[in-house]
Each structure stands twice: as structure tokens, then as C-alpha cells.
Image (cartoon, rainbow, N blue to C red; front, side, top):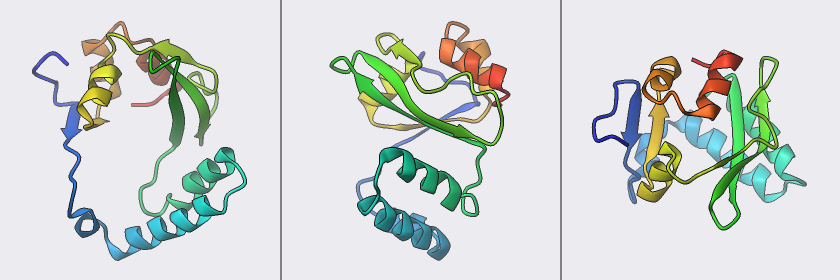
Length: 140
């Protein structure tokens, strides 16, 4: 982070208490169903498919991706992606070094990062290969 982030980026501090107060009854019901499904799921892919399908009424989205840190936390590697559009350019197998990236800063802080305007974010971070791919996919 550069100290002053553009309006297109929002950071949300992780709260240790009071999370239930932030959820509506409908959101709580969906979260409970997800928890039950995760506990009995056959695979990570099925869990993610269920998550994508079951949450559309609560927080609609057209893309979800799941990545893991590998190589002792030095690289981030995409393991699962799903979208309502094609083609997916940032998909399973995409990997990038974490060192020096804005994601490294986010992970170290423990904050949640919400990028509200990806094109503006790309103009502020033109070296971000993953952001370029997402913008080419049509993510805004």
C-alpha cells in the first residue's frame, strides 16, 4: 500500500466480536446451510460450487475464485474458479509471486480488501498481471 489508497479500494478491519449483528436473518440462514454442506462435502470443488450457487440471492456475484499460498507462502496459486461468463483468463493453475504485491500487504495486515473499481485500481497498479487478466475478462 502506498499510504493513501484510491477511492476504488476499501479496507475493512477484521472484528473479533459482534459478527452476528452484521448478518440479517436471511444471511444467517444461508451461512448455516453453507456450514452444514461444508461439513459433509465430498470435495473442495463441490463446496465451492455450492457456495457459488447458494449465495446468489444474498450477495449476487458473477465470479468466485479460490487460491492458496504455496511454497512456504511465497506464491499464490489459483485452484478453483467459476463465473457466469467465459472465457476465464485468471483460472486454475495461475500462479504469481507474493513478494512485493499489494496482496502480500493485505495478508500481513489481516484486513479485508474490497476493490470497488478494478479499472481504476489497475491504473494505480499497472504492473499487476492478475488485475490485467481480470479486467480483460470484463471484471469491473
